[in-house]
Image (cartoon, rainbow, N blue to C red; front, side, top):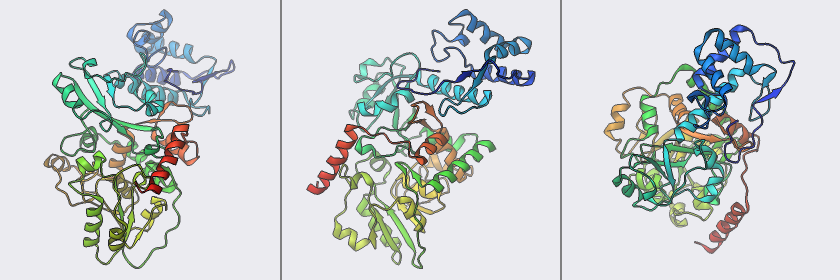
Amino acid sequence: MPPFPRARGRALVTSDTAAPHLPDAELDNLAAALARARVGGDFWNPTRDPWGGEGPAEEVALARDLAAGGDAARAAANEIVASWLPQNPYTGAPIDWLELVAILAEWRQLIEANRDISATFGIARWKRETMDAMLWDGTGPTRYARNAEAVLAGGQALIWAARAPGDLAGRLAARGVRVGEVEDGFIRSAGLGANCVPPLSVVVDVLGAHVDPSRPSTIETLIATADFPSALLVRAAALRETLVASGIGKYGSAVPLEAARKARRQVLVCGQVEDDRAVLLGGAGMTNASLLACARAMEPDAEIIWRPHPDVEAGHRKGAIPATDVARLATRTERSAPITTLFAEADAVHIISSLAGFEALLRGREVITHGLPFYAGWGLTRDLAMVPERRLAAAQRPVSLDMLVAATLILYPRYLDPVTRLPCGPELLVQRMREGQAGMSSPLVRMRMVWGRLRKVLGR
């Protein structure tokens, strides 16, 4: 078991002297899977990785035999599994050996990807509670830094741009450092980041920011060029259906209430945090006030439902609209109803660049983008801002909703199981949210919630 920071997972196997002997065909498949994944021994540690010829001699010999194939590989696989039964490290339930190897393989891919990261800047201490494991490279503590000079030319740095000095990226690039970004994932947590709830998902983009349409990003590249085999699309469809049925969005689960359909067209307008980079970079100059005004102008006969952003409502961020303007433009304001319920009753959703537009797409709603979120320009939304030629050219390949879901929620982010603190897939995090096991409370979270309520009372 890799010693991920703060992990409290179960063992990978249980001892059982009566464990059944695997048939030769299963041993051959297991040996091949282990060799492909290069897992076993201290595979996470370069100085003890038997697949690199390091560590105890017996483990190096096992790795060599597994890689050789044939009788030697079968004997090595049999030696590994004899008197052991595999179990799911997240739940403790029995699983197949190949399923266990698949989990280890995903961990190895994550760990090796993190070895390219020389330093990470701008990560608040309260976020490190969960981010350490998602950024761990197997060699020691996650490398957080403050000084650009700490990164050598040719290295890869990550920046949480909202908290890093504005000139940091430029200074790093001038020294020959490759600069990428790290941000919250799209299924983030059961609670607001503005309340200092640490993220259970992050995205690492070595090309740039997914909220910046002026330049390519990894997610844009995935949507445009990734291979989407049928098994991945089936997985994406199942994940989408689970999210919709469970009412799960970026900040947790809220089972949608039954929404009565009305004769009048229902239009949901979702506000954003106006000083958030998603608006500053991808907002096409829009504000919440101009979004609401444009939606009313485009939908003169509709019932307009105004949904303020939760962080703005919590009193932490910028973007409030004067009540008189809201009353003039919107039919009603919905502050507390689950947004999934609002999606259910809406015929269309207007956004600047909010992730709410992506969540509305999952539910089959018409989405009108006034800015340029990463999911615009692929033929799935009605886009009012000018889509970059780069993305238009890439969009010559038809992009289905499940291709978008696969890229956005499976291939792009990293996830952490809140129960075991082990990196996991999106399905497990969604399950934990459905079961109410994703809460991440702390004295700081409780203090921030009180502070937010106080700011609202004071009118700030």
